[in-house]
Image (tube, rainbow, N blue to C red; front, side, top):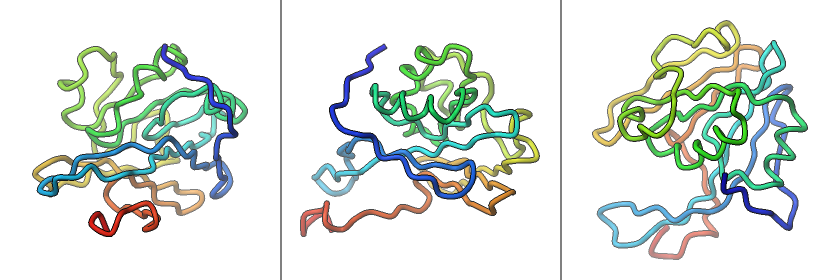
Length: 176
């Protein structure tokens, strides 16, 4: 487990009842055909399910501050990668939360044979969140598909990379 200490407070924002966004670190992502690495502020969504367990979608780097904040919300039960890019920190989360189940997006089981996935996400909600979160796999890209979720109680759509909202101030003029 490579959990790093974090000297500052973690940014966690409650969106609606039982749903939070946790801001992660910034990563730089290579986006062809441009010869630059674009800065992306990563974030994850945490949903408290009816049984009190937490559904963690697109886990961010697990720092001590992030772990403390998430533990304050409940017990992590489900760690989800909505597409093939959002797996980077799943191994650390699996070690920190050994009783949680891991869920893979299409193609991720082959990409991450080191992880023990409970299921590959499809168009039907998995039993632990059935009736609470609907899900559908959105394809159409030659690079990847993405599983998106809909929280029924709050009518909240949970997306990863399908639609992105970035602060334009983090990009250089060329990157914008």
